[in-house]
Amino acid sequence: MSSDSHKSVEEQVKIYLNVFGALLVLTGVTVAVSYLDVSFIEAFFIAIVIATIKGSLVLGFFMHLISERQAVIWILISTFIAFLILMFLPLVSMTDHTNIW
Amino acid sequence: MSSIPYILEERPDTGLNNSRLGIWIFIASEVMLFGGLFSAYVFLRFAAPEGEFDYWGSKLSVPMATFNTLMLITSSVTMIMSWASLKMKQFDKYKLYLGLTILCGTAFLAVKYFEYTGKFSHGIYPASSTFMGIYFTLTGLHVLHIIGGLFVLIYFWGPAGSRMWKENPDLLANRIEVTGLYWHFVDLVWIFLFPILYLL
Image (tube, rainbow over all chains, first blue to last red; front, top):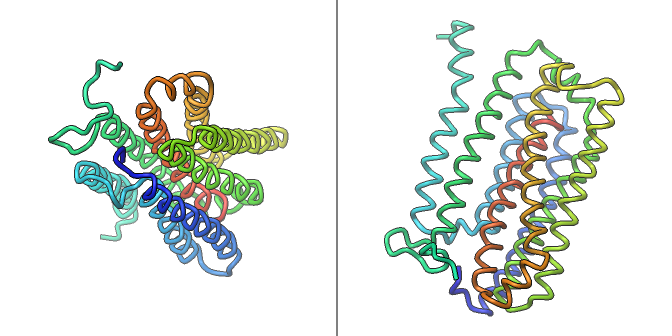
């Protein structure tokens, strides 16, 4: 991003402030929905969806992922696949213990 | 001048300079580090007796954690504003925004200190329960990342940053961009820790 002109950086600043506002609102929503009378699975799903939206805003705009090079995108895609495998390991273990399959 | 190649200029093969490529690979390794602990949390939560995580989770302070979330989100925006100020050749604003980032990070640590000591004074330790074990592990590791980030931010806020600005402003902007990527990642981790530990 070393080639960014003064004007384009000024335009980006407006976007950063809008993202900041969105993150504040979503934090309020996160806390508010935690008081809803829903099951754990529903609460977990809602919390993860909101956290993912917030995370995407930080990744996309603050970390400039939306304008990042292919090399970085591929590093993150392979990391995400490895992360998913890591998250599914407990599920495999649990289904094994509970003899669901 | 640095003797390491492609610190500022982009490599033709990757289209990136080595600073950015390096920090992104580091962040990928950090995703796996925290990912392993998130995976452990899921495993422990589903294996725990019903209501145990709810019981111990209710002992955490949601207002304190919400305040800390606001601190980290604010620090993320001030961090990017400090980088934007350098790109717009406004060194005074850079110092201001980076100083605010350091303040927010320090406030986060102060709140965490009160949270931890509050738990200890009530006889709650990592060994008290499975939930507290994973809570202290996840938040403790996150706190270590905040402390590490603050050392780097203070370094660039101090005389080293001023000297670099006079000698090579592009290099300082590059350093702040890379430091910012790390700092945003630390914020990103907290965005997921907050609902999982405090709200569920």
